[in-house]
Length: 136
Image 1 (tube, rainbow, N blue to C red):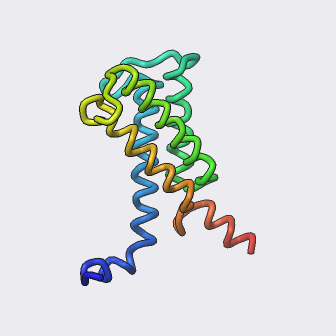
Image 2 (cartoon, rainbow, N blue to C red):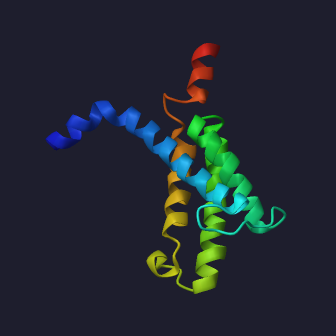
C-alpha cells in the first residue's frame, strides 16, 4: 500500500461524512432551484414528475446533510437519480453509454453516490449516529 493511502487512513471517517454533507447540500440545491425558480431556472409545477423530483431533492438533500434516516433516504434519492438518468437523459438524447454526450453525468454520479451511502450508512457525524449513541 502506498504511503499516501496510509497517510489518509485516519481521515477516512471524516471524509465519508464530508462527502455525505456536500452531496446532500448540492442535491438539495437542485431541488430548491426547481421548486422556487432560483439560480437560473424557472420553477416547475409541484404536481408533476419534476415537482416530485424537486421535493425528493429538497427534503432528501436536507435529510442526507443531517444524516437522518440516511440509508432509506439515500436509497430513494439513488432511485430518483436512476429515473432522472434514464428518463431525462438517455431517452431524450438516446446516448445510453455516453453520459458526457447526454448531459447525465450529475444524475449518474448522484445515483451511485447515494447508493453507496444507502449501503455504507451516514458516518459518525450524523443524527443517525447520535441517536444510536444515545440509545445504547
